[in-house]
Length: 234
Image (cartoon, rainbow, N blue to C red; front, side, top):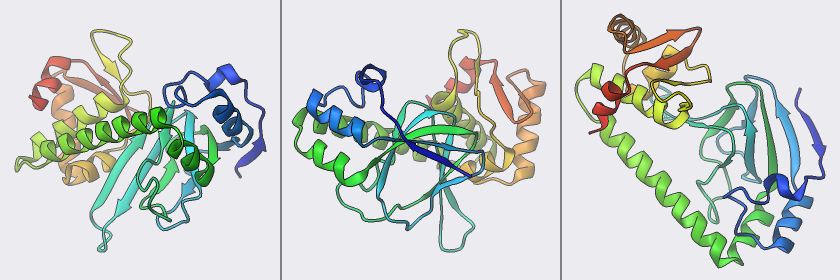
């Protein structure tokens, strides 16, 4: 069961995070008074496609997966939200419902803010509106690149490009010689992202392990040859 509580948030805990930095102090204080803390266990649903878009979320810890199936329920859109990220951006100022579902890949902790309040404050603050415009432009650029990477006929290339995308989006770059993804990613998820079968993905990852390009144990990836993976985006 989720736990929910109203929490008095220290102004300096979130005040100067990029997503909130352009709000004035009175605006941020109003947000702060209407922020709620919620915790979800792994596998719990935050919202489903077509639910009323009444909350904006700020993820504090853990990983959230976004997904949307087509009418056949065969093809799926998959994306991830990592910590210190606001979501969803899609539908801001226009849509009444969510256009995809979101669930906790790990145990997570987040704040939620009423959508109407959040959007009304942004509308009145030109600096914050510009920040959101740039953020949306960056998201659009990322998805355009992702589509370009995936529109190739070679299955192995699509899988490696999907792995590279996950490495760049979710990877921990603390170690300069290798990158690990500190969240569990399944073979099925990579198959969905690359449009390949589970067997093909499994065989490709096995070959990459034999080539010492990566490690994959207990659903966790470690990328050992960054030059190799980055070459697939050039």
